[in-house]
Length: 252
Image (cartoon, rainbow, N blue to C red; front, side, top):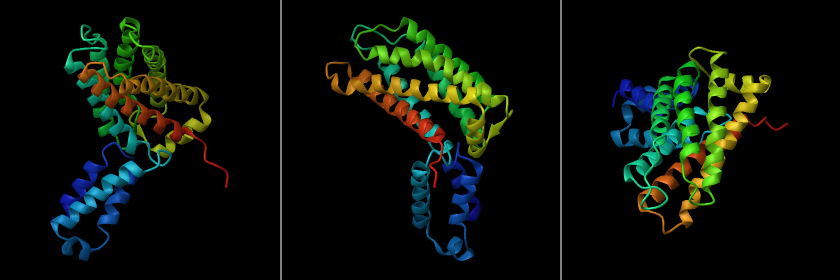
């Protein structure tokens, strides 16, 4: 495995992460000529796997991009399973149509996040607006079959307003993308961004709680339960990451 291939692998592992984080991972792997020449393909694969683990163990306060993209992918996968199953909370019900723009917004946001060397700003506004429209419309038309549906509806309404605020506010600071360090600095001085960020974390947590309740609803359709649980895990992952990322550092 030549050095160029290793660099490309690290770029793939680091999609959505801050460029400095990706460079650090690559430098650790390519620290000497002896390592590049002496390691077998299996050894390189082990480094590749270890770096994937490093991505998931990176603290959100250091690089939110290490969590944002995979959490988005998990959420999109869960919603896609739910939609593909064609049933809702009851066997007679079908997924409401606004779920489609939500999926489109998530996929679009995944693409823009993967293209960014850090946290997406201007390029994320349009997908955030599409997802927000779908969330708000879904909150209006989704039937309340179970008590936890109220948590999902409330979370969707808050998400519809909070997500655009966050990305529009970030877009006023940078047209392309921001490093995570810059985002944290903005959160410390921009009250509007900070309030929108906290509301976004809250909305994601509310949706996650409602979705995860399907674990104990054994009578629900299978595709609905599987999709809702996976999506709930993704929403919860994002909520936790956003919350931890915005927390002020503890005094020494």
